[in-house]
Image 1 (cartoon, rainbow, N blue to C red):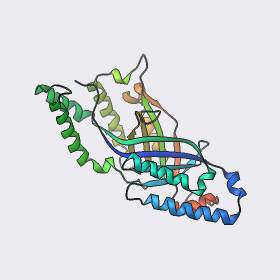
Image 2: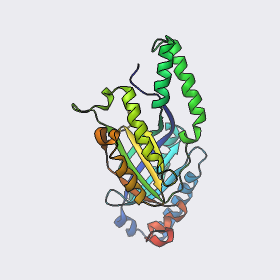
Image 3: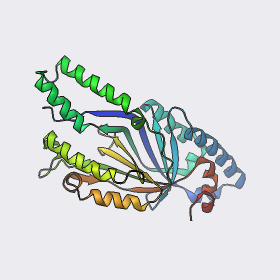
Length: 276
């Protein structure tokens, strides 16, 4: 049996993290600031409502940056256009990139993959043959059509965002990729059961980044109560897939910032967009 599970791939995703050059921003006169704010409000507002995919602004908490811009687009070309649109803003002179993350929305199909592999092997289909490839293609096309809303999601409306990248271990003692696919399926099923207990309180979007960025997956969690992030991630640390095989990158916690309120954010008028 082939070792790799099938995946469905959807929206191209870009996280842009910036530090605002506040001293430089405050050094320009009020009329210049007003012009720059109005341009940013118009451009970023139109990107929030782009029919090709959503963008959203978030005010980041902590030293890792001040602003996070998240983009969902149909493909990498449109993603690059969104990135360039931000770079073209006069505001970009005051935005210092701290990091970024490139990925695609990914749905793993461990259960259906193993069942499909077993069925095709029982039928005598040779792996990697034309018949095998056609069978896999037909199955993934069928599932992609059924899961289109999850593959090409709208930007969740929740107040808080938690983003972090992660890997599966590939060390000498523990290597996720050397574990039999049946065992990985069992562990991922148990892992998913924990997430289901939080349905309705948190929206999770997993994106794959193997070959695109420095980690293997990106995880976006959206909720109206930030404590849900702590509870969910803590509980997941105890399941086998996480406790034994997971490695986590930096965490970014941010608050949703509508483009219509961005000018107030630039003026430190925090209560105007819901911050304390």
